[in-house]
Image (tube, rainbow, N blue to C red; front, side, top):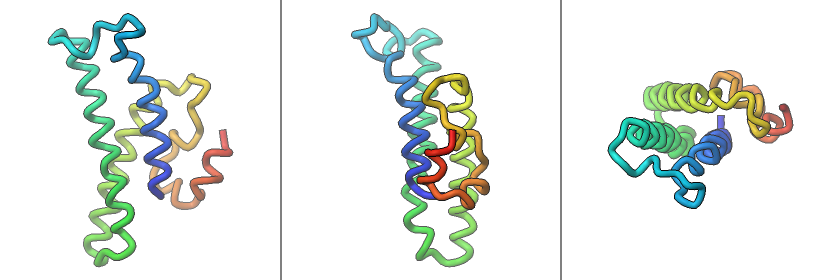
Length: 118
């Protein structure tokens, strides 16, 4: 798995969430203290936190074997979080098959080939 997987899935989710916060679309959500606004902020924070793990991927190559296993587990966990969120829009035209795959399935598929698959 590479950083590009995280960048693509995060961009896909952000493209779904951003309009929900945009005042130009007439949205009043996201900024208030009502439950919908809180849920939107929590979801956006979960996406940002899960996507931040992409920084570990670059460190994996030079990490000691024990640390490499921890990095792998962390990357897989955070990918699963993003995958679960993205699948809420599985019927969206921009949803790609890559977002349904488990982390270990992405190891066998180079990032460039995964985007072509749809």
